[in-house]
Length: 171
Image (tube, rainbow, N blue to C red; front, side, top):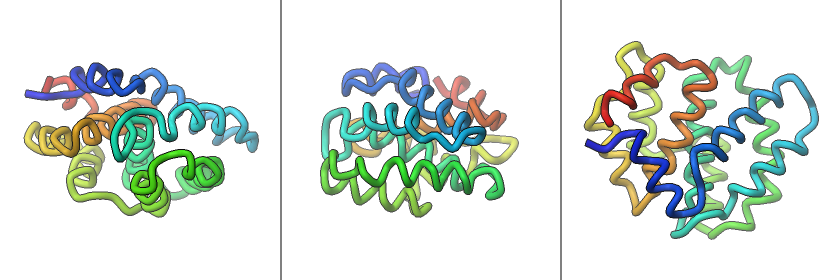
């Protein structure tokens, strides 16, 4: 079975590793305490458009992070972070492919594909996502689903969403 442990290897082939996505999530949490978006802009500029394909790996990982923020984090906590992220992302989306820019704009608004929503919503429950849902997400595109899962796992871990252990059980 595929799982989170296989994701960094697949995404590193596209030059985006889980460490950089973790840095983005760390900057998002830091943004809660500071109005300075410069660090956030810096890490986003290294992710947006980075990777191969119609939707580069960095963009897919950002979509995963946005999904967790929109669907698993209380609105009173996520609203400010989402606003900062949207402000930092908007000037960068033209650096990526047209289709990926479109998906990033949809994600900023909280609109995601069904496979992604299934996994993220399950992360917000005590049982977490099942192996089949994770496998369906990973099978999305060449690396898009796996790269989105890197973003989901990083955001879920940092925001302490408990079912992240399910990702390891699937590996």
